[in-house]
Length: 339
Ligand SMILES: Nc1nc2c(ncn2[C@@H]2O[C@H](COP(=O)(O)OP(=O)(O)OP(=O)(O)O)[C@@H](O)[C@H]2O)c(=O)[nH]1
Ligand SMILES: [Mg+2]
Image (cartoon, rainbow, N blue to C red; front, top):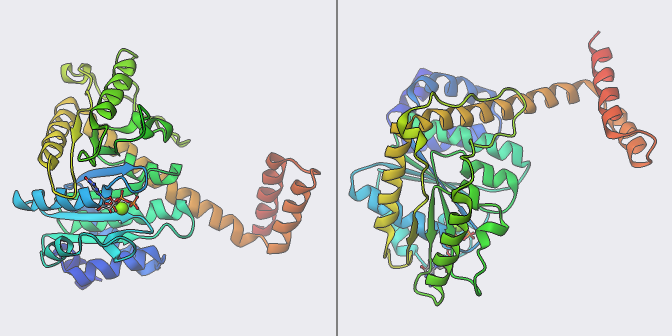
């Protein structure tokens, strides 16, 4: 155990990869290692990046990582994406540049497929972040496709969230449809080599102006365990963050430095306003809730037989039982099993 812990803390790449796999596969021994690593975490800065499929997120992440490396920052990338070019899956236009990154010990790239339950995915992603953090990666970038609530949630819980948009048809802003407007700390209009960039920027600006005068929304939290109290009000917290809009051509790297600059400013803003601590709390609460839900559900299911469960399901399907009563019944069956 101690050896495995030390290997991670020293940044041993094989040990990192192995532990993340073990955590993904729910191996109990890995949880002991995670517990030992946990006191060594809390240093990394988490950057979430999301947006519609094919907007150039991975290409952009690649460029961001290169610039951060130029500043001597270490970067871990978690790509939650079945068609990630990082895995050599689908698109490999950037093979050469990815090779550049691959030889660099200050970069670690890991992809996670969206197979299985998304709840489990959120937990596995959180575990990977803990491992990267313990291994002293300073910047952790989490890429998820901006479709599906659970996937968006994973990116949203980062310290800074980038929403990637591309010039579309007319004034349409995809981020609005996907419900991503509210979660962006930094907007990137990528593929700025295409027609209509300025129209997209203008449309985004207009949408932001429309929401600007509405009262500040606290970070939404859909959990049930507890409410998060707002941070003690400081003068800086009174000043609303205005998400900047950066134009980039990820394939050439043009404009990516402005994204780094925006992230640096957002980080400084969050630190001085006390909002960083609040986000961190929200993220960890979400993490605890995920684990709790999984545990409680697994605990109950282990006490019920498949037949018992199927019987209840059939009754609900046939409208003999409503879902709430069904849950009451399942809980009662589980209770009786115990005694
Ligand atoms: N013209 C142009 N093409 C770009 C730009 N950025 C990325 N692309 C291309 O867009 C395609 C998709 O890029 P990715 O980086 O894989 O996009 P993604 O958002 O990660 O895609 P998913 O993860 O599948 O949602 C690739 O062919 C890229 O080369 C850009 O700035 N301009
Ligand atoms: Mg991608």
